[in-house]
Image (cartoon, rainbow, N blue to C red):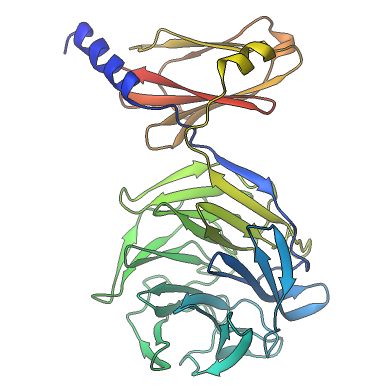
Length: 411
């Protein structure tokens, strides 16, 4: 392809696409009334229910309810039993708390909560008592996966039918583990991370297909961890926090279609043993522990993927901000130049067209290198590997101001 044709194609794509910002943005919301970890978090009708867990007082049976629209908390009917480290899922508009630990015994019992009359009912127990398991729901059938029985990690997979109130044993998960997370997308369940032995975390991802009752290995998560949480936005799974031996703030997204993981903007508060769910394209990360054996928190942080955010030229002018990219399109290297008010700290992040963060330049101090900050980019990622030709996005941040510019790489 001639250089002329490359430029024509690049300019056509440049004009076709909008300015997108792919960063996951986090903001603090009203804190949960009770600090705790290893709780269960579930959503019904855009209302979040935070159930059970533990803190310095011991095990809990409390139910606290978060209204995301009003950013307020209220209290519901407590569970009949104290418990932590249980699985939780929603089917037919009701919340199911499955297994866990009551301070004395590892449990097989199942509790059903009805949000509409704020009541609890005991249901048929699992065949296998276990804690630190995970639950996912497909077609209103509940799948209880993994966990431990107090002595060994398990690979058990059992299916619960709320209509018949009955359990069926399914094909075991290939890797026995506890402290994992799981989400269902397009009729398949993805079991992610966890602890397969001792206190050693893993990156393992295994996909379960309920239709043919089979498991398939998938691309490993980027960071080994257990005690993590997860939520789904736009058919992507966001894995949040975890440990050990210290609490993590890491956020990574998994695209099942591409079978690939991307790094995302970290949570403001590092923690493990947290709960999470998503409402209206926003993730809520609630509670957890900021330290390995202590640091119970009531933090409630909301993360949303902002798309199409761009500041006006008048605002840029009033702040004395300039961003220039020359040449664009480019083949070998380009220069990114930015001018900002003295004393401001600048961040530049480069994303590919699927929203993956591939290169970043943080904490660039304008006061030391006025009037312009100049950065050369040779089309390589943070690890020095050359990226593919295509469209990239430069996210430019200074203070509260943020904008995104398109950049075209031609080889």
